[in-house]
Image (tube, rainbow, N blue to C red; front, side):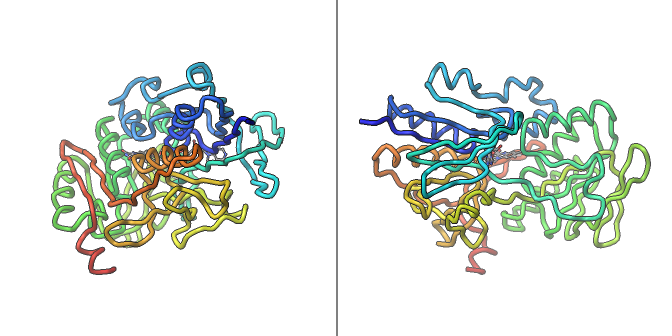
Length: 355
Ligand SMILES: Cc1cc2nc3c(=O)[nH]c(=O)nc-3n(C[C@H](O)[C@H](O)[C@H](O)COP(=O)(O)OP(=O)(O)OC[C@H]3O[C@@H](n4cnc5c(N)ncnc54)[C@H](O)[C@@H]3O)c2cc1C
């Protein structure tokens, strides 16, 4: 029998897990991981702590290398190779080797998309000024570290008071900065009920310089060589030598959309309970897909590592003929900042009133 050829787009949480599980289930399959980045299988959850110097060595964030994938699992990892189009008719992915700009076609029997989600960067005045960062990849965290080390900023603004924003705020406080958090909602950690979020605000406020709630950023100006001014919609202004935007992520569903795969109302790739897209030869997992919330019954985006890993395993199972199914999410998350641990699961009162 011919060997099955599985191509995986994205080699971090969902993609790497899927590849390893595929190898466990099928010794003969040809498995190719394409990732446009410089690293495979790194711990994005640790990035804020690498910026904060809590994790000091980059190597601690690297869970596996292309060599390890090849030697231990006989899986081929091609870094700096971007999937630019899918020809579903002939079952090929068009791939661009970013360094050589060479394009080639990669055939597949099964295709798994795990391209993740990209940080939102709204088109505000001054958004492209130096010193304004988002955090998704290891190179992003290296850039922020280098900025801190070369400029030694005293003040920072973190835009967004969700879990990545708060982890970043803690990390920058750890690096000795006065941190202001600007959050559009009237509470930190918007997925929490307000009574719970108040505990978070109080704890965060004792460690940061200022928490600005119910206010959004209007734009950024260069105030001096070393400082930006962050202006808010309510008319406040904050000095910052460093700004981190943590205002959410958008699913990377363009490749799927352009290939004519079904996209859901929230912009994520639509999949069934076996992580299959609207094309029976294409699966999708992780931050790029929409999942059903088992409490509300609604489709939503759940950009967390747990579901990405689980979905990666399910896609591998199904590709290998097993009847595994994803049992929907109940939005469970646990985070810790400034010595406080916050955990949530299920729906808030606000959500339940809305649905
Ligand atoms: C700073 C930060 C902290 C986080 N902390 C936590 C946490 O504490 N707990 C938690 O549960 N989750 C956390 N997350 C979220 C978690 O990392 C994601 O939910 C998870 O990584 C999603 O997995 P994924 O496989 O969908 O995408 P990713 O892990 O993002 O991998 C996608 C990969 O696909 C590649 N790619 C995209 N498009 C293409 C293409 N066309 N061709 C080739 N390659 C492509 C990208 O370069 C990327 O390497 C955090 C995320 C960030 C950014």
